[in-house]
Figure 1 (cartoon, helix red, strand yellow):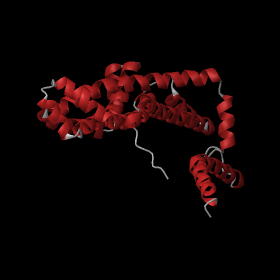
Figure 2 (cartoon, rainbow, N blue to C red; figure 1 turned 135 degrees about the horizontal axis):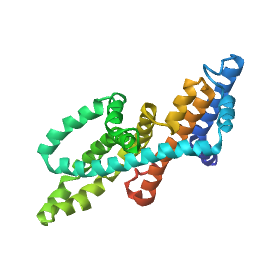
Figure 3 (cartoon, rainbow, N blue to C red; figure 1 turned 180 degrees about the vertical axis):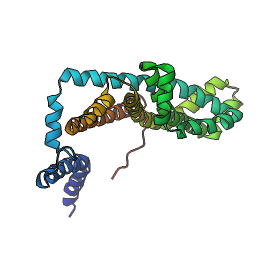
Figure 4 (cartoon, rainbow, N blue to C red; figure 1 turned 60 degrees about the vertical axis):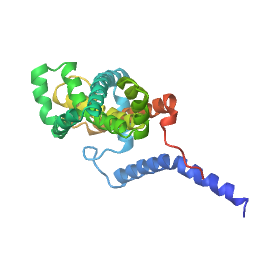
Amino acid sequence: MNQTRPLKSWILHQANRFAPALFFIGLVILWQLVCQLGNVPNYILPSPSAIISAFFDVEFSRWMTHLWATLRVALMGFVLSICIALPLSIGMMRSELMNRVLYPALIVIQSTPVVAVAPLIIVLLGTDDPSRVLITCLITFFPLVVSTTTGMLETPPEMIELSQSLRAPRYRETWQIRIPYAIPHIFSGLRVSITLAIIGAVVAEFVAAEEGLGYFIQFSTSFFKIPQAFAGLIFLSVISLLLFKSIQWIQAWWFPWSLPKKKTA
């Protein structure tokens, strides 16, 4: 009886480890079977084989051109949102008045559909990178502000009291106590924001662009090249997933203590 427990535990561990990959493979196989057996036209739902064929029909250099255009805008908007969100969060944490004044305004900005605002930004700033970066920043900075402010406000009160009793300067209280306690919340916001940055870049490309994966998808759809559009969409999803995982890797490499403890069986 005791000898079967390690085997059972190993099987369960392997099943949990490969479950996402097996689910994805099964989903792709089911998708292919539905398209083939149901004779679904490619302009309605292309099969995985048709999407793969359409992906390789496009030149590699063309993919890289569109990828760089989207990544450039997404990463610049992401970095700009960090530069805005961190000082803003510190100010809102320190000042109750600033928090009460700015928080409703941030909610209004976040609640406004960026698709509706994007054409106005394009008219004001033109069709170059600055307008697209601003559109991306408007989408990405709100989760960072909320997560960073929440993390700093959840610092244990006894740590703040100890800092005040030692007459530590406010900047030390912020950077040596509050910010470290907020690291898990900050990285949660970063993981959300990096995927929103891709969405923001694509929205900007839908409005006004001549290159980028968003432009490529829109162009392909307008000419009824649906397998090609799906190829661009899947490529975009893979890039978003890699960026999401990169934030996790950075946290695991630089701040391993901020990760949740794994449960032991």
